[in-house]
Amino acid sequence: MKARYVLLTAFLSLIINGISLYNLPIGYISIFVMLLVFIPNLFLKIISFGKNKKAQGADYILVKAAVDFEKNTYSKSAYIFGILIMYMADGALIFFQIYQYDYIDALVTGNVHLPVYYTAAPYLIGTGYVLFVATLVMMTIHFRKIIREAGMFQKHEEPKYVARDG
Image (cartoon, rainbow, N blue to C red; front, side, top):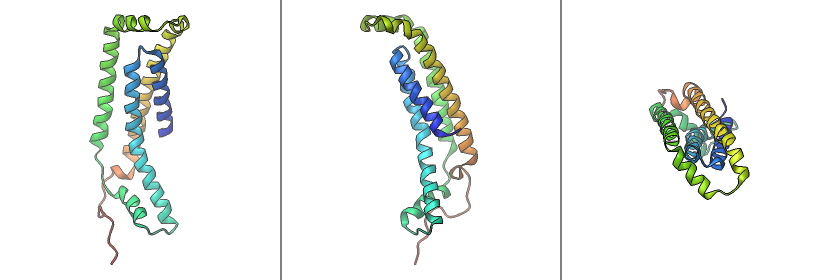
């Protein structure tokens, strides 16, 4: 699963849940899902860029540091903990939305005066839930792939820091 698909689905979830107003807290969680996916992929891109530059013969300190990112072993537990927090927050917010639906409905109907909105709201709510659950599933599949394949999550016997020349 590519990160861009997860990010696109999370962004659509943010937009649809934000428009529906009933699922606004779930839309906020989509921002954290996007960050949780974007940050490790940024490091993977930096490592890939460094490897490409090193293969082309570049010998700069920034290229060495970019390649050295992969030699460091990063903890998988932080990402697994983040995924678990996302699932727990999603469950808590869905419970909150179901439990407090009457209050949320009164707030929305008291402030939004568009008749078209009320015909589209049930579809937006359903679509928002589906997109958010798809985002969580895609995020889990993506992290499972990254944790198994990415070199930064594997143990290395090489030194962790860039070797000095001279």
